[in-house]
Length: 405
Length: 121
Image 1 (cartoon, rainbow over the protein chains, first blue to last red):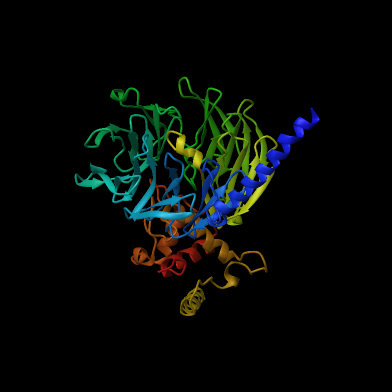
Image 2: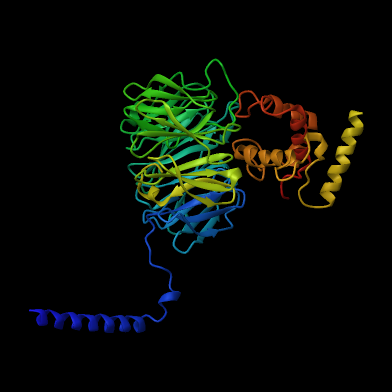
């Protein structure tokens, strides 16, 4: 019995040794090749002042490399190719840059306008659209080659009767291979259907001066924040023929108009427990709305003017960042009790937060501390810090598979 | 007195520009520079580039807000620029900065914007 067992064991050992040796000889250059890896736990951090992005690994809290030469990255944002390998970085100066996470390099870059404000990738991953201020409109590019596919000037008739171009904002992707965006100067919401041979535009009247937009995670409702009046404009994409409706009529600056030092961002609006948690405009409050009828049900006092109000992926926590000058802290709200459970100090000028896809951690950028801090969402304790030059937006590759991001 | 001070400011500004690099106004205007802490001028310069830059662009070439480079402000005296910063522009996204900045700070920022020393060519 014993003897029978030893024979194959020795044989196996010998075989393993031989195969191992052959293996070494068969791949002499193995060390010089890039490590084979996936991109699912990678991401990009925008370094706004230096016009660079960091490629990071969220499992190892590591900076894999810095990619430079992306231009003016104030208010920059990123969407990902559906294979999650390439990030499309939208710069302020009209630059659209395709960055390879694996080689940490620029694959392609076009200056597609004079001044732009973010973009989106289509449902099928074939098109990247950019929202432009100057000249006002949306341009659509082939995601492979960055060749121009469609140019949609946001033309409207201004008050003086002249044909003008509007700044475009709040560009998102929607089901049906559509893009949806708002016209700041024309008070309209447009949908752009990319399934037709000739891209088809549909126009809807919206409230005054829409300045940003969001789409609900299921892709049904497009909601535009309004600068020119209180309330929000909502378009039900399941029933576009009904046009837009006004929701949360009290949402906005209200009678007691307070100066707003940074307009709240709409992307990442928290929807938890049947309620929407939204940043108040000017007031030091997070507002709570009942999703059934979009009525305002609660106001949670916070320590400053909120900019981002984001739910953790499990919807148990609401993380809030703030506008200048109260922007050195982040507050965490329990979505059930609606009470602040912790005030964190990640550094000076906190600009953005990004949850890992399953929500066990959140990365927080502090621009003036040149630092990104990773927090455990259960213990609320920092687990890692990374150095970055004036970091702003943090974008994980998991966005590749999320509608509207 | 005030005029002499202003002229003095302009001369220092000119010297700063001529000597190249970023120029931060005289320390006595906005409090002293205390060692490791960023000076008041550094703090204000950072505010202009980063926070004003959120709407006006990091190079101040404009965004949601208009461009603020010297050529864009040529038709406005320093006092007018200061008034806009102080009071904001009603009906636009430009807030009044009076609640957060002193008149001296606003004046200093207005001068820097007019001279263009905070932005690269």
